[in-house]
Length: 307
Image (cartoon, helix red, strand yellow):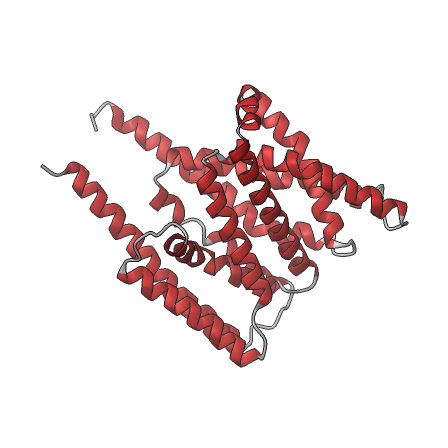
């Protein structure tokens, strides 16, 4: 890098760190938002989240001058099928997560997001036939041991954690295959799901189970769910353009850590001994994973800079 380019790169990195903190920091506090809607049916909340996200995403695309990119995606049937499948997985992930928030399972949900990077590694090996490096294998093994231990200690698998990690891991896998960027892909996914969400709410309303319109506070929260869902993704996209993948990955643990602290300290969920041991195993696994990611990135830089 030339001396003249160094200050610009430093500014871009600082901006990327700021955007990453905004994105992951806001996601770490999101249980507070969904807890405020705990009196509603979680599926109703997911449907409203889908519908109110659509105008927000359309506005973001318009402001970025990217609406013209939509027709190309709509004409690509393979991409549309992948985005429909990833949209369904995202809706399932939202449903599990919001159910957990409204049923005092914040701690278990945080465990799911801690193990999600390791689920991604496992899916990469099983589906994409990626090579599993020794430290990655150890990390995945420790995560599996934590889940098995928690299952034996509590007498039941941590279904919420497994549901959150699996649905989001599969979602990420399909989005990787689809090769559409985050904002455009989410807009198309949401547009594909919106008719189903609207139909579901109409049927529920006809049966007398509608939550909307509701008292002013609840209605505002439902409408605001679109902004809450989409704006952090925009911050994440800005961060991803300015930071390396390895650097960005180190911020992802802010979110489940925030959920863990909220569940334990604010919502008074029991942090029992089995959970402490499971979280400790996951922490060690993530340390191996982070070290492997850092060393691999360092090796790649060395290869590029080498003779």
